[in-house]
Image (cartoon, rainbow, N blue to C red):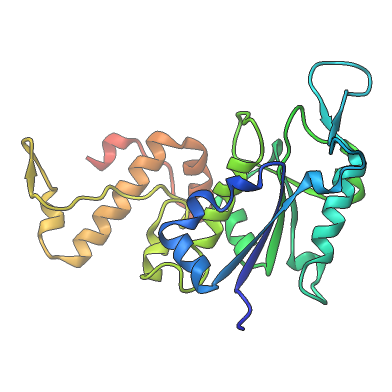
Length: 252
């Protein structure tokens, strides 16, 4: 059997959440075809008592519960032992989904897609014992500046972003180069039939058949949207491209 191009290991208290939406559409088809592989492990299987306890009260007091280091340490070690033989650590990131981690962006997604696989640790409750992160050199990754009930939804989002970059998953790979963030800009607007809808017409340039004008229009729209909606990305784009900032009115 051919080895998958990319593999993901999930450590979670809720294995039934996977593959979830990744079992459908392009990601699901690619999973069925063996382009990528998903292994899901129940963290409770590594608990040490008959009740399968995985958490305890926080040291120093405070609300909520914290996932135990001894349980998580064993779960992580078991997952790492199940990776392909002779895999290098740098080719298989170990990631904990956490609101205090590095924010996931397209650059990091591309980095993960270039690896052999990934192990994703999904936390619950107030979080996990810090010693596990330190002892296993676990990278923390966040979806953004907000808090989720657990890491599972974040893990699904991360995997979806990576899987679509695997060769063979997207039918027209050229479309990936034009998506938001690939060139440091937000994607331009899209239109399709009917030509006129509720009095709104598709922009004339897109009906012209002039590929040069269409390409220029799309670039202008990407720059405009990025400047208006994501000034942080716009500033970074200007720095990388060597362009000068412009007032939106100058483009009209």
